Length: 244
Image (tube, rainbow, N blue to C red; front, side):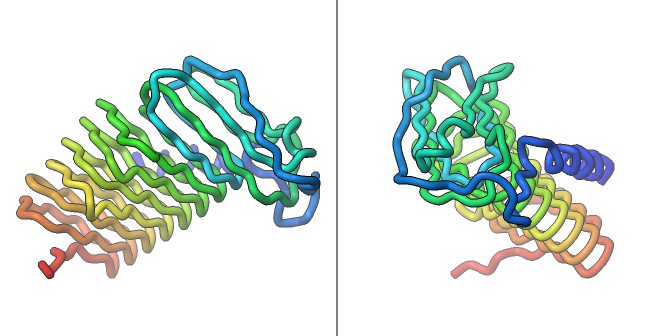
């Protein structure tokens, strides 16, 4: 749980940073106006994506780098897509109170980190292969990777967001602080480690070992025949899925 608490602290700092907190709830800032327009951005050399806008981010593996944004006309100048230390950062440079039709399409040769702050989605449209993959949600957003081929992967949620996975992973570590859900019933992991603080849940197919630590009312549901080790404090549970 020590690592989970550290993760929660870092997420708290991140969530209240300028690039995440746009005062949307209070109606302050720029309102999106005009028709939705498409713009191609110049960006390359990234292997990670970090988004803090309420947008649908679609990711594809391709030979070349590309970034295409769709946004209302007056928001294009303040919607930033910048590469920093190998990470494509997507954010508003000014407070935005309302927008619609916001979509970003990203392509690149390989990816090893998807990070989402606030709401919105990151969805992989093609298989994602990575030796070490990090999936991070802070808030109510969702990440979808339906065709994963991971060596090791970490799926972390702080809040009510979700991470949905399919495919295979040698090892998967999940960290949930809050009511978020990791839905990986369609993913087979040789090893699964779960840390839940709150009411979140994890579902996964596990072939070898399952190590679950729960503080609160969280739940772990698994299929397969792994050896199981549990440490539950509260009303949480670890349950084997019944075969249909």
